Amino acid sequence: MTETFKDGARDTDDTRHELVRLRAQVRHLRAQARNRPLIAEAQGILRERYLLADAEAAFALMQDTSQRFNVRLRTLAEAVVRLARPDDRTDQWFPGRVRHPAPTLDSLAIDDASHAHRSAVLREVLSQTLAITATHMGNVQIGDHATGGLWLEKHAGLSEDFVDFFDFVGEEGTACSQAAKDLAQVTVRDVATAPVFAEDARRAVLEAGSRSVHSVPLISGGRCVGMVSAHFERPIRDLHAAQLKALEHTSRQVGRWLAWYDRTVVLDALEHLHATALDPGTRRARRR
Image (cartoon, rainbow, N blue to C red; front, side, top):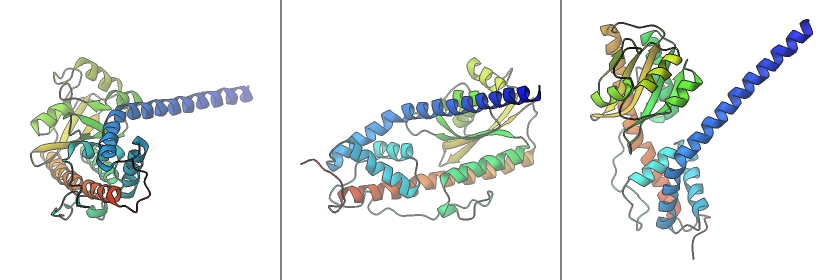
């Protein structure tokens, strides 16, 4: 009896672990499919610009730069596509660029804002938001320059189905999209009845065990660069003034830091990519 129970338990655990693994694999494949068109476009631009032998050489150039500067490949590719073409006669993509010091992040457990990784900053702003709002569920999103939507980057206490559904959020149908549009904090006291939610989004939030949500835009220069949201298991009233003030302070700091990251770390990475591609000593195949 005991041995049979143990075998069954082991089978159940193995099945659960396999399901988790497969879902992670599916999510990874979806991310690849989502990023592939943008990365392919950047590869084509780099191949033409620097006379590279093939798309693989362009990808290797981006991959090396991504790893060297710890900048996500999608972020780098998006910048290559979005920003103006550099002057091929100089090894500087942004000549005369002034580098500013990193904004302070004293509201987070970050020792050195100038050398902090973006992933660490996003993880800390989520942790701080959950602490301020006294909940264990939440997520952080990053704004998309091209579409104006939001990509899910970090999450805690939320279901796999929630993560899958809200991988990308457009400009309508959720609390976070409303907060991004208004550039202001949004409290949804009860998801079940709130008109801000589209029905499929409402269902996904409720099925994840969230009955209320508070979304805080990460703002810089009058633009939403990201979003952090806290979810609650029960309907809530408005947050206290002290909570709102603390969230505002943290979100402003992180918003300014994210904007600094885009115009400093990401541009540093592009400068390196440009100089590397132009260096005649670089071991890189080119068209003849």
